[in-house]
Image (tube, rainbow, N blue to C red; front, side, top):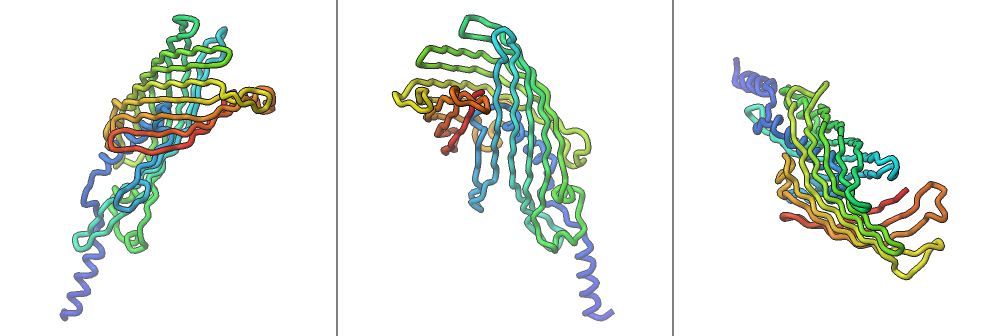
Length: 308
């Protein structure tokens, strides 16, 4: 065999080699993304809208948004119902090699979660209730591989195959306990909630074998809101100003995964009373500008809310 033939044979053998991840910790990343999912399955004002940038690319490495709410049916039927739906995106990058060359594999893991809860109000006073809640959560992660055609044409190990369109399904069971204080006067309203939530997440079903895992979502938080008239009127009702504060301490597997173990928010905004004109049964609309801060993280957000 000539020199050219030997070179072609070597090239053929190299191209036939299987690409493998150099940092082969997909299962640890799976537990990590379950830990990120823990932020989404717990109803929490602080992490309801969160974006963490990747310093290398200036693109969001983690993005989360959550829409949810809860309320008691009535004092005569003290059943408390809550629900939340959330979307998050995590953009990890892996390195794969076939022994002769390496390739960066930028990926995008999209997550959708839904949480539902049912509880019961036990009155302590006319303005304070103790509320145990049972929660169930479902989540799905879909991996979206963003690489060139070259890598897609190579032999891939099963871990890389998960990155290219793999899925992870997870469910969570747990609950929460809450103290809810609400003082309503003719002009002002004070609402303070203390809550501890513990939901255990675990993969199930047709989850790819490389990414089976579990994680705990444990969060303790306090939320306070004060509403009072501004002196202005709209829709034949007083316009109120709103002041908010929240603090969330992350105690489960989500603690420190993004570099912080707590988040706090300070907010101020306006509330419009639409009870006189409510064809959609919306009684109040609120817009609140919030400042968020924690360990090595800070930012601002605009929140919109409706009361029914």
